[in-house]
Length: 447
Figure 1 (cartoon, rainbow, N blue to C red):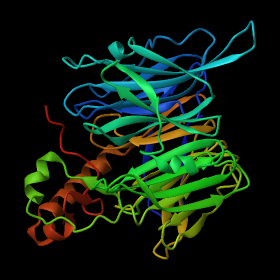
Figure 2 (figure 1 turned 180 degrees about the vertical axis):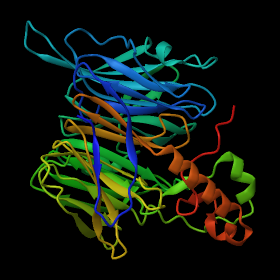
Figure 3 (figure 1 turned 90 degrees about the vertical axis):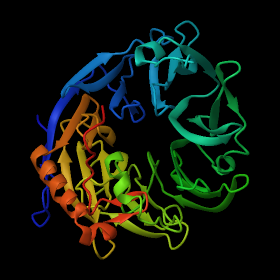
Figure 4 (figure 1 turned 60 degrees about the vertical axis):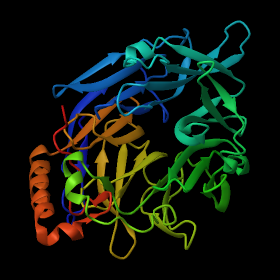
């Protein structure tokens, strides 16, 4: 059964085509799909199945390649709960992969949980994924892990990558690298992340967004108890919670996503000199005007605008009519410069919502897949400069590609508009380009 795309008759087609499908030997879950971008800007996918198998999906010369990566210290009978990965360097491969597992002892019936961190401390050469997979630091956990997430925090020598792990003990745990011991250790997060101490219950999902000047951040956390916590944190001196909001539902909230209405696109290197003379905005208001998607598992989903100001909510129609809601992402799926909301469901349907001029969020498209949806990512895994919709179901990975000919035409038209002196100044603002005037298509990757 192939995936299908439907739309209201009065809305133009997104033209998503299913390019490839990769079957998995056993299903994953909401936390077992993550992207990993190398120093050249190419993105690969790490996919974990519950039965110990971890695969790397990438494209080579335009062709998809999927292979198993032999990560060590995952014993027989263990189940993978979550996976996350990051490249700490922009000039070489400095991959770090985190994997949480649970292993039941057949003799005692007791379960043991571990957080395995894979990295290569020898930075004199690139750390290929196969090398990293053999360098493991296992950390035993006293709780059942849930979502594994990474963000940044201010350390002694600048900004550092930190692991954020939610657990069954109703706490959010933080793990930071120790360069002296070449290891990782759990740290007290009361100073760096004071908002986590205010969260009650088991956290299912965490999302964090920093302002461009790194003086503020917004933290969102959704819970098993139906609560969604939102925090505005001031970082100018030491982290301090300046604002907070709590929302409650009757059922678990599996995900939460912070987003802006406008899709902001980094300027490609080839256009940096063209926009260098354009003055930057005096103030970054993206954090203060943050919007949030709240997908309740068994109730209707909502989008909240300006959560620390007016906090007006908008119902997403029919999100309670397709079985359990499992995940959500926000992206500019139709390349008009405004972000859309994508809701994944166990009912084999992906619902796409778009904001109308009235401010309401209307149904834009529906994508149907053969199996229940577990996770979604919008990234450039093909390496062609456009973004693909990656959908993980209980049977495998679906890769949806935008029509290449339409994307090429869109790129040429918008480059013409950009290079037109009459419209150049109105199309460019500071360090970012609005997707209304520039296609989300990079120039050919530099060799």
